[in-house]
Length: 207
Image (cartoon, rainbow, N blue to C red):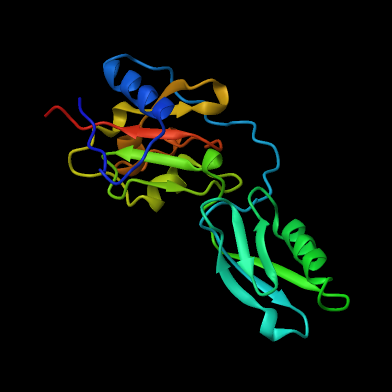
C-alpha cells in the first residue's frame, strides 16, 4: 500500500521517521484501537494561528481581533509581544489587564477565541487518503467519526479498513481502525475515542 501526502505539509523529522516506520510495516496487523480512552478534562488552551478577540470594557479603541503569531505571542493596542501560547482565555485576559494597567485605570478585559487551531502537540493529524488531509484542533470527547466528518471522508482510492492510528500519548503505539466500515457502512462499532496528539494514517488501496 502507498500513502499520498500533500506536499505543503511540513513535518518534523521524528514524525517523518514514524510515518516511514508505519508505511514500512503496513501489511502488519495492528491491534484494534480501544473504543474508549481515558482523557482527563481538557480545557482549551490557545495555540499558534488562533484568532482571538480582545474586548476592553469602555475602551473600544483598545478592542481588537488579532491572530496569535507562529511564535505564540500577540500584539494589540498598548500590548506588544505578550505570550499567549498555552493559556486559556481567562489567563490571557488577566495578563492583558496587567499590561494595560500601566496606561488606563482598572482595565477589564475579555478574550474570546474565534478560530481554533490549538497547540501543535495536541492537534489531531490526518494524512493519506482523506478527502481533505489536515491538522485538527482536539475537542473534548472527540471521536474518530468526528475527525472523518471534518476531513470530508475517504477518497475513492482509500484502503480505509487498513488505516493506522498512531497514539503519541502511548509512546507512538499503533492501532488498526476500520474507517471503511465506519464511514461507508455506518458501523458505529468501528468508532473510537481520539486522544490529543493522535495521528491517523490512511493508506491507498493496492487495487
